[in-house]
Length: 117
Image (cartoon, rainbow, N blue to C red):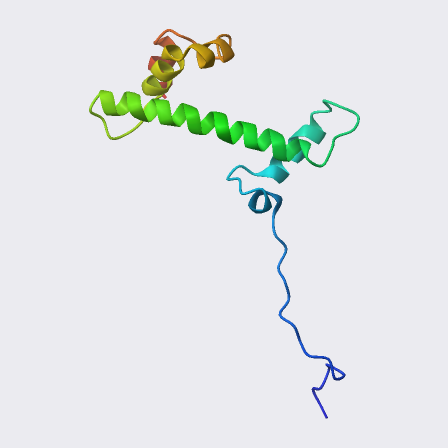
């Protein structure tokens, strides 16, 4: 009976842990959002659903911006999305331009300087 560790129990296949991102069917990392929320000290207490909800919002906004930037690239007969396409997409959409009005420069100087690097 050497090697018999089961003691009569059948060995069930072990279930691997499922990440919170996979459980919520999201591409954005829920655990990273949770860690950043806790390290940022934005609140004394956080619900367990807070990082899931915020990751879902970030994924939704990102997908919408990329969709609009892809349409801008297609209109320019380009196969690749560039920062200029993202800026045009944000500038042409009323709600996104209000959301990001103080976070990105509307001029081309920042993009031109970034290319020098």
